[in-house]
Image (cartoon, rainbow, N blue to C red):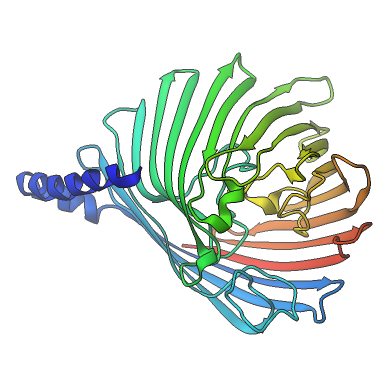
Length: 408
């Protein structure tokens, strides 16, 4: 299905030099007048996990370079290159086949190595639409179904084509065809990339001044037999908005999706997804929230709702105990508080996890963080997660992070 990309690439390669010859000065100016940036992110991560012999101590740093050209006849291009270093401490399992012989340590999924994170070209001759071709970051909605896994040092990006269209002032749509998923483990191991034929539809419809409806359909077709269980079709609708109250705004979100097997998935199943969330801005500095998320399971087959393209660290606790949905599904009841004080953003979250079908408790988790900017270019983040398991297969886990960032 992806052979139609070849003539597009050939046509672009042929057209650009010819047009450049006609207007070489403008073309060279577009290349030279772009914006470049450099980013550095250092992180120390500690993990103590029951059932694993040794604690993990990971000291990693990511150096990122990127460059965006100026505009030339509606065309522009962007490139981004990352290199991840292991700095002094390497007592951890980076997973995905990237660190053989280190299974005595818990997983910290930050392998070292270089990566062409993004390389794409954009074309548009109006504000109403845009065509993007190449390796790209795709962050849809809250990244529950399609995201960049930005917490890990090596980001997840996608090879494909994205067409975005503003149908009306209040309505926009996007379609992406993906041919490869470039995962966080890098190209040096088989787990680092997935050969896919994915079709991603996402819309945004503004309703009044405060509400937005987001319909979506995600058809995932994994070509590798070992990953075929991720071949699914997911259709859903998300509503977000706010209500003004006398004591502060109340932000609301409600979402429902249904999922079934697709393509070469070896199991036929159906499962549902629910998400409800309310966040009350008590003051300019304090917000408290209550949320409920449910990833269902098909009791007849033991299959559960899957989100293989998600930014998983942002959901169901920072301890990452639910990167894969258990056979019984998972219900997550969460309470959140965010407080701004003296330049710091303090966050606390409590999760209670249970099975969606069959009953039973998985455990609970407390997450806390404190972050702030240090001037215009630097940032500091302190973060910790404490998971307490109540069932076999869900070990007690403690994780602590110290992160420093710099951008130039």
